[in-house]
Amino acid sequence: MLSRLTLVMFSVVLTGCASSVYTDYSSQFNFDAISSFELARQSSTSAISLDDNRIQKALTTELVAKGLTPSSEADSADVTVQYAIVPKTENVAYGSSFSFGYGFRHVGVAASTPVRYEERSYGQLVIEMINTKTDEVVWKASSKRKLTESMTPENRRTFIQEQIVDMFEQYPPKPGA
Image 1 (cartoon, rainbow, N blue to C red):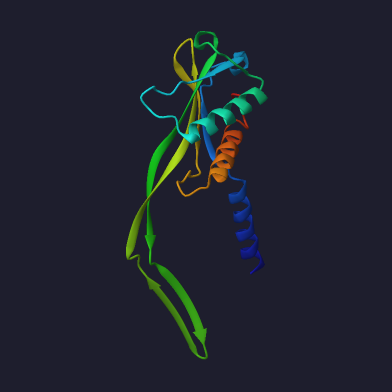
Image 2: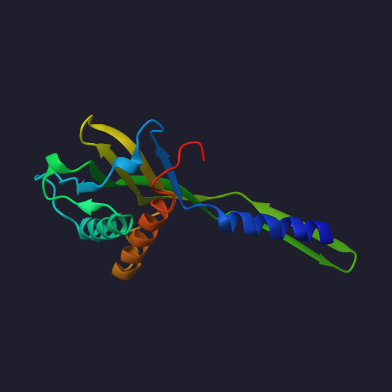
C-alpha cells in the first residue's frame, strides 16, 4: 500500500514540474550574437486586439530583461520577434461516470458512456524569432496552456506574462547542454 501511495505522489510531483511550453531552436545559430530585436508588425488589414498589446508589453519586458535592446528600425535589428494566438478547438465529453460502492455483502461498480460532446475553442500562444539577415526562424516557443475567451482581462494579462516568462526561461539556448 505504501509503495502505491509513493508512486502516486511521485507522479503528481513530476506532473507539477512539467514545463508549460515547448521550445525549439536552430543549433547552428549563434544566439550570443543577438543584441537587438524588433517586434513584427501586424498586418494593416487586421485589427489590433487587446491581447496584442499585452503580448507586446510582456515580450518587450522579457527580452530587455534578457539583455536585448529594442530596435526602431527593422533593418538594424538582429532578430524579428513574431507572435500569434493560434486558434484551436477540442472536443469535451459530458455524461460519463464511473462509480464504486459497497455495503453489507454487496459490492457494486457502474459506468456510463459519454452522451454529449461540446466543441470548445481556445488560443495557443506561439512566438518565433526570425534572423533578419537570412529571414529564417531560429527559435520558436509554443504554449501548452489554453488562452480562453472566458478569462477575465486580468487573468489574460497574467496568463500571457507567465507564458512568455516560461518561454524565455532557457533563453538563450545552450546547444549540447
